[in-house]
Length: 133
Image (cartoon, rainbow, N blue to C red; front, side, top):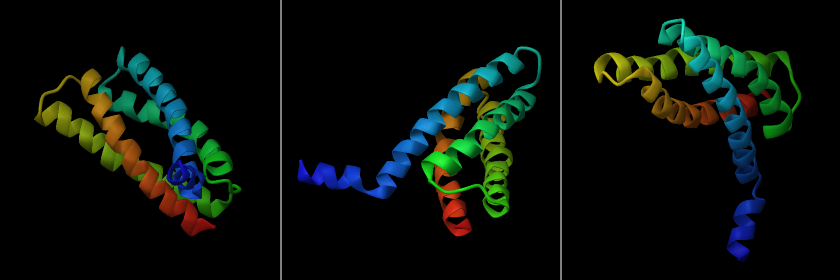
């Protein structure tokens, strides 16, 4: 039990839990927008649209709550830059790989892409926010 308390009380563990909560909320927003836009647009358009909408929520929740810092031009540029890397390299790259190369339906490929990009995003955002302090 003492070992569990030490793990739970660590700041990085709490940050990761808060990141997961914020990520879950933003994932739901992202997924909802993706599947709505996908009804009338190409999967790449839906992917960009949904990500940009969820990014608006994600930035403020990540800065204020996850990492408990204040917005600044430096962390705004860093976070938005990291998210653009995540969107155009990780997400678009994975979707292209899954849909075009492995021929997986985009509505199914969205799920593993979202999981992989969430982990990548946490690592990159954590680095950027810490660097901007």
